[in-house]
Amino acid sequence: MRYEVVISCALDGGYNRAPIGVHFRDRDVNLYLYEGSHTYQILKREDYFVVNVTSPYLIAQSVYDDEGNYSTIEYNSTILPYISEAYKIYVVKIVKRRFKDLRDEYGDTQLMGIQGRILLERDINNPPLTPYSRADGLIVEMAVLYSRLAIVKGEKREEIVRRMKEYFEIIKKVGDKRYIQLGERFLEEVKKYK
Ligand SMILES: Cc1cc2nc3c(=O)[nH]c(=O)nc-3n(C[C@H](O)[C@H](O)[C@H](O)COP(=O)(O)O)c2cc1C
Image (cartoon, rainbow, N blue to C red):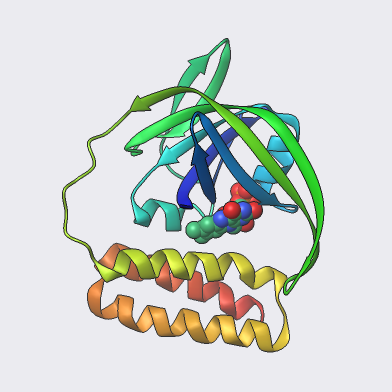
């Protein structure tokens, strides 16, 4: 099973967060990073990061920028940022990096495969027991499409925009103000490419 989490890491005192898909295997966490993101740049150099288990809303919001509340945890004299609202965190050390050239529907890029070992896990906040809202799934799907906007062109971009608008129409019906505002911010970005 692939799980969507928020990866937080630090470089030169600055904190970075990004939603990333991960696979857990025993005490290992495996993930793939596309070249071009800050997370890719940082984890090419830095060996430690934090996996944050968060709400779907925070997963979606983390794609937009690095703003938000951070707390820190120290491991072996390394200070690492994590998302203050996370339910659970894993401190991870990278044990292997593999680089692969990739040609797919989004063009040519480099992929970095990371194998990390979980060094420490900690419960941070109790997850709220709330019923499922379709706004949760849809805002995360909008975030995925938003993250692809910059790397697609022409018909593919039009298709992405069409799907983002379709999801947003449903979010307007089932989501609260926070979800609607975040959806609006994602759609604002679309205008940049017109
Ligand atoms: C739910 C979700 C899952 C994502 N999974 C990945 C992933 O596995 N690998 C990746 O490189 N980018 C993934 N992305 C895209 C990055 O989060 C996106 O490029 C982000 O802007 C990177 O932020 P940064 O520049 O601060 O690192 C995902 C986005 C979303 C919304």
